Amino acid sequence: MSVDPQWSTPPTPPGGPFGDGREPIRAVDVWVGIGMATLGHLLTIVITVVSLAFRGDLGLFVGFGSQVLLFVACLTLGIVQLTRPVRRGLGLGLLIGWGVGVIVLPVVGVGACIYMLSRIETG
Image 1 (cartoon, rainbow, N blue to C red):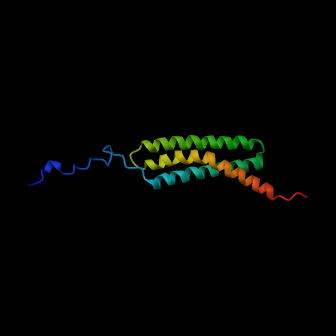
Image 2 (image 1 turned 90 degrees about the horizontal axis):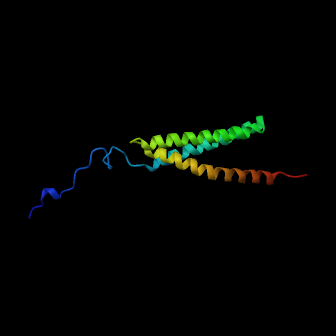
Image 3 (image 1 turned 135 degrees about the vertical axis):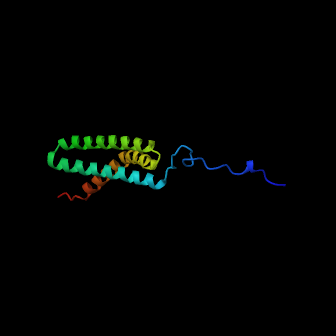
């Protein structure tokens, strides 16, 4: 008994595993995007602290403006990168990183401030 050729494995579709030219999302690209968004958050924190030191109350507006600018940049670049056929994980990582950073980094910052205030000796 011979095997009929029609029951063999079908050929791989052209253009990647999805058949439409898109590559699968790689975890490395997602982590790179998360790291980029986290670095953006840290940069906005530094900008806010420096502007508070030199400009006082105006520093809060500068900090808020830099955070809004980071949001627009991560959202725009994230969506654009997700719609491209290659390195889509970078866009996903930017979106995840911005969302997680907006929650986690202020909590860490408040904890650091409380720790530093508790170390000040009153006298």
